[in-house]
Length: 348
Ligand SMILES: [Mg+2]
Image (cartoon, rainbow, N blue to C red; front, side, top):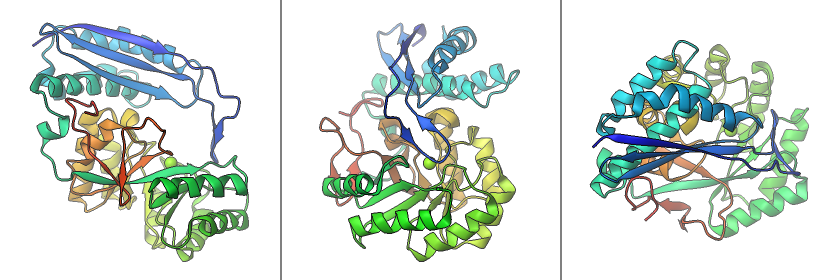
């Protein structure tokens, strides 16, 4: 089997007039880039990378894929997906493989694995070897721009859908406001529902310890990205100072970043993003490395790729998703969702 074509499509979306907000940024959305790998057997595979912000992001990424990555993949056998992953990292090293390059590598890596799954007629987790048939899921619903009534309503809606944990944004100007937010949500969902808190890199390490102690006392499940993502010394300090698990990883790039954090005991919950990690090949490496360090894996973002990966990880803890749309293929049962059964990364 050889790759004969790689189609690149830009999907632009108009920015939302009511963007979601966290302590770091406003997220109006700006579209995505879709890639389709076509082979000489007629079997195809798809992958994509989306942007929560940066209006020009999809155009720049499409150019990077077209001019830098596509030439490496054309004519190659998708069965050598890990080799192609290495080749794409080597090619982009000159300007830096971390950043936009991993978005492109991720989209192509996803499409190649999708192709292999479809060739064998099985979901990718069956190629890799499974552990779980269901994965616990939580709903990231508590955006910073919601007022108290709005956040209570959406958290109740998540619980009504069957979620047993919700995540909310914090990182208000003061500790008192953060504490009040958690209390408001706790009042809405009751004592049996897990509450995660996420400050999106907005605090100093000293302030993160102070607020972490408060969240610890309030029984929060984890304390996510309290300080800038690359501050490895700060994260090592936080995991030592606090009992509440520190979750981070969505803004780290490639397995090498995770290796450094794990060696320094700078993360309790390992939370990679598909695009920034560099695709399923990288997620599998990060997940296995985390398992060896006895650290749980929680996805940043949901979707069939993360679910296929988590199905194979003994340390899979939680899938992240939003509220389930009426047409969502996910079905919650006792707070967990089923793993996909379709070939490649398709649902069924
Ligand atoms: Mg986060």
